[in-house]
Length: 135
Image (cartoon, rainbow, N blue to C red):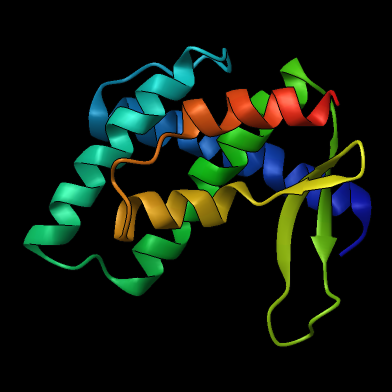
C-alpha cells in the first residue's frame, strides 16, 4: 500500500468511526480534541460489554482500526503528522501516525482500552503525545 492509499484508508476509517458513534452510541464526533472524551466514553462502554461477553475478533479488530483512525485524524488535524504503514516486521505490519520523528499507534491504544486497561484515556494520551511531539 502506498502512502496515499494508506492516508485515504485511514480517512475513510475515521469517517466510519463517526458513523459508528452516531448509529451505535448516539454520539456526534466532530474531530475536535474534546471529542476524544466522547471516544473514551465509547471505549469504556465497549470494555464493559467485553467483560460481559467477549467481542468477536473481527468486530474488535474493526473497532480498534476505525476508532484508532479517528484518533489519528484528530491528532493530524490539530498537531500534524502523517499516516505511516510500518512493514518492517512482515508478520506484524501496522499503521501509525508519524510526527516529528515519533510514532503514535492509536489503534493499539484503542485495543488496550477496550480489552485490558479501561482506565486509560485516549484524550489524555493525545494531550501527552501533543506535548511530546512538540519537544
